[in-house]
Image (cartoon, rainbow, N blue to C red; front, side, top):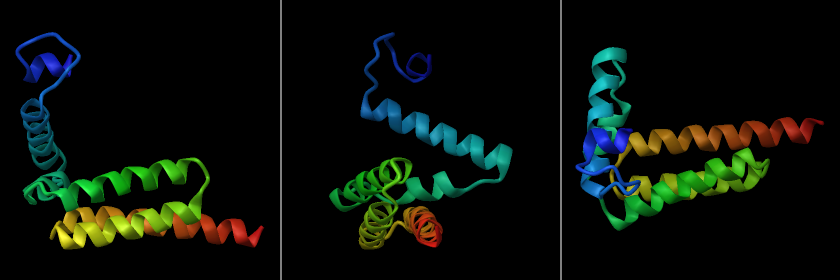
Length: 113
């Protein structure tokens, strides 16, 4: 249904422009209803290949974390942080730092067992 709200057709394919508008709309909602500026700040960074790599690294880090591969999750998040830093996306860096912390937290709890 979200595709219909932002697109002209009822196909499952959403164009990049439609996805961008949907994210901007979500950022406005988060900002106005929850006083949460993170997504808005994240979207301020101009798209670049480095930022795209950082996003992919962040997703891979999350997947590794959920698969129980905590060391790999922290490693991928660290690389993601470096890429967000290069792309000057502070909101992305903040997100990556949470992933690093989560990976390290789970690693240390496993080592105590």
